[in-house]
View 1 (tube, chains in turn cyan, blue):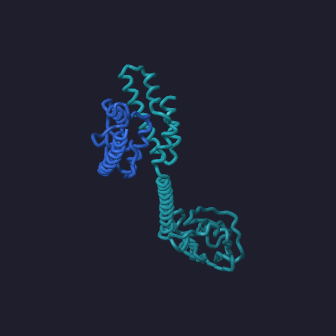
View 2 (cartoon, each protein chain N blue to C red):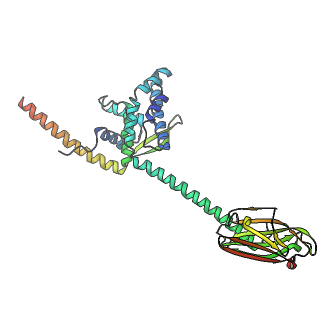
View 3 (spheres, helix red, strand yellow):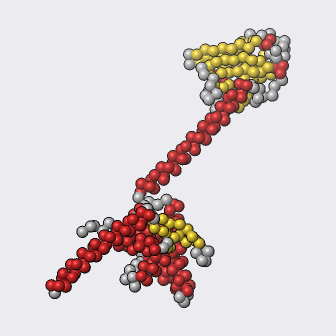
Length: 236
Length: 110
């Protein structure tokens, strides 16, 4: 058996020590055997013989490992593991809190500057709000509107929770329908992006030259909310 | 007779360290030398004793560079270790005195 094998057999009995403590014990035993081997080499033994004698002098590694293990009460190992788990949980919670704080900033910023996520001309700006439960739908632009002409418009809107720390309903934009003077309009195209706190969407709608308003309607789960956008207000 | 609260090996190790700080292999060789090889132990068995004494606060360990530059783990006795040593030495002396007294009595009868 060489030094490494001696230490391997010894350390595998160390069940109540932390990894750091096991490494320290291993180093201590390797150092001891080196000290003994060095003394033997100085006494005239060759290196191989000195190593063999130094290991033999140590005795039974399994029995020694068990006796060392008895000196380390299990409770401290469990306390150290619990401490690590608590630290991990605290760090994860802090990360989530930080993430929450970061996206809360997003929710605050979109209220102060509704156009921070879009680039639309000022003559398409509108300002209408719908409150649907705790969610707010803020209509901010009607791009492509040409008064008195049939046209396809893009209705831009932001969505966020009443509270900057609250989350917006992720599927809310699919629950909105739209109506004009000439009838219901089904949006077949559009786009948008969202995170937990803030969403921005764009719905493409066909407008006729006779239309004077677009009404956005939410009619689900016993709740009916409508918001009428006066097309004459676009860009004003 | 007071019960021996620590094993003899503990008493011997604390006694060695009361004189000077030592590293593991040094304790083995000193113990053998001072006892004229009566106390010659399997060297690995020293460390459960040392770690037990450290856990009880009777000794503490530190690192110090050897002449070769390699770091060695030294042990030194603590204040509470010296207190424990004094108590156990006294217990041992009482025990030794009692044994000697019995042996003298037996010798007197022989």
